[in-house]
Every structure is written in structure tokens, then in C-alpha cells.
Length: 173
Image (cartoon, rainbow, N blue to C red; front, side):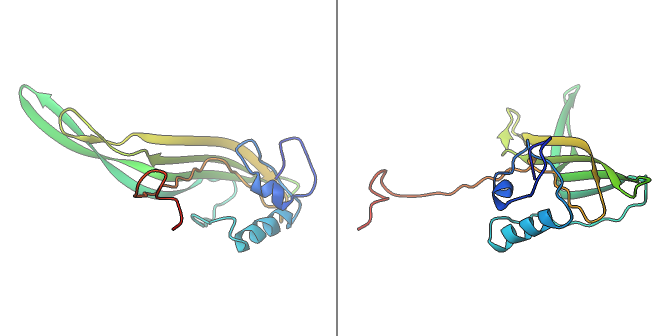
């Protein structure tokens, strides 16, 4: 994985420094080996491993996530009615491959990652869910045996609670 425009070997350091500005291809097995090494060392986590088969020049999609209920309240002439719609939250991936004359595979990729950012109570007593959404659209081309990575769309939150007196709770007794 290299900054765009650079070429060379992929190192573990390159993988550890992966960010949304880095997208690339390595030859044959280098990237796969680096990713496998990082996974064995506990430096990566596979969140999902979906597989899909698609024909040349046809579109395919994968959705991983959940549907969140969104309640809409309307007031018409004093009559209040509520309706429920569902919003997709999670990962949505669309691909459209094309095999070139040189047997390279070019893939149009559209990816969206969305997640909830909590819940907010409305003045009417309802609940709304603010969402965070990240998108990427690109075309990637690879030769037989090459691995491609589209990265930088995910995020990770860590949270925890501690109890005790500030300053004293961290002292060892």
C-alpha cells in the first residue's frame, strides 16, 4: 500500500500507517502476506468477510448492517398519526467488474459506511438518530493474483467507564 503515484514493496509499516490518502496495488502476494501477518499478530480485525460472485459487466451489491426504525409524526387537522420507515445503517458495497483485453480486471466500486451517532429526544417525545456517513467511489484495476485495498472509511470508537476519586483512583496502593 503506497501513496498514490509511488511504487515499490509493501512493508508492515506501510500497513500500520494506512489512512484514507493511501490506496494502491502490490505485486502478486506481497499485500496479502502483509495483511495476513498483521492479522496473526493481532494488529487487524476482520469486521466482515462477505463474498459475492458477479458476471463481467454486471452490477452486484452487498449490504451488511441493520435497519433502524425512523418514526415520522404528522398532524393533520388535529389528528396525529405516526408512520415508521426504516433507514439502512452499516456497509453498502456495489461493484461492477470488467475484464479487459489483457485479462486485467477493472472494477467500479461504490462504498458507503454509515453508523448511528446516538439518539436525540425531540420536543414531541420522539427519538431521532443522527447518522455519520462516509462514501467512496473509484475504479480499481488489478492483474491476476493482485490484491487491492480500499481503506479509510471505517472508524472505531472505544469507550469505557471508570469510577473513583479523580487523581486518587489511578494510584496504586
